[in-house]
Length: 401
Image (cartoon, rainbow, N blue to C red; front, side, top):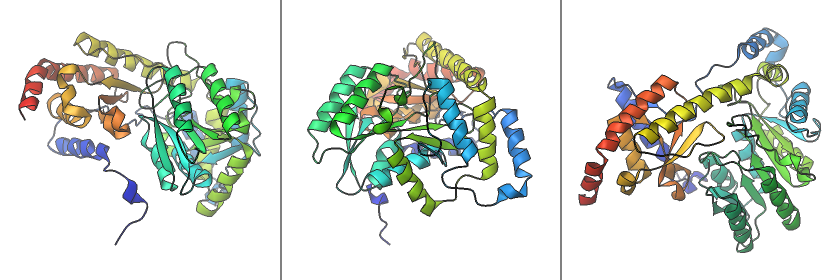
């Protein structure tokens, strides 16, 4: 049988490392898993208690609403007001999704079709590119380095050389996988660009609360008029350690939100209602949780980056996300990210994500997820040190091969 749509998907390189990791664990090896960004911190107890209480009420066992219950959308609106001094109309400008990933992917179905184009940074979280591809559109990649000015210039040039003109610009800051962050002036320029060129900006704001060193990430809606040209996705997955609960939000442009709501009304009946009720507690009563969660990830970041620096692998400390984006050390760079990831797994017993999985431009990097405790991260650094010490021999063997 010939399968449709997925024929445009490349091999999922992450699965290669995942399969090797599973096989090693079956052999009894102790693998430190810094690959997938799967939070290890528990969901705060008040949220779990509210879920348990709501689940006992049989009225919550029925179908919910694909747009999300009204009190949860109101809680999102209040969160935007407290956090960013931004007004979101809970009736026209907010929607609950089954995780930000689902909402983002389905929004692309609403915005794009065959023959359309979108601009997406590279490297990027895979769904950012492939949500557009699933919708039948073409993707033009815009290189993302640590220089925001260069990225914005590259984005405008990519727009000018693309025909038909892109309908969507999809960005995400703080950025997965690179950890790159922006300030409000970047969004001011981006909103101005979108208004001039009649494009919609989709901002994946998944790491709005996971930031360090006093950095305060802006919402795109802090720019006046941004809701005319933008939709922003936020999530409780990382900020409240609720990744398995699958609950996210879309906010912004009323027309786009209405379109997504209309599509979802055909596809689902919304998130299980007790989860939504528990999420109200998360947004309304747990403002102290995200800073505590971010502090844990920040300490882990320091342990990893400082440890790598001591063994001769200097890595930039990100100001946001739960990831560290690390250039492959020079002696091993010729291996490429997939083979280097295999080397770390087999020799250091450390699983990381190969950068090529985030786009071809990521092949000189690997991504560490800060999802093990500090003692385990120190253990990982000790294992990596052995690989670093053997790196000249490894590179020599690779060159001969």
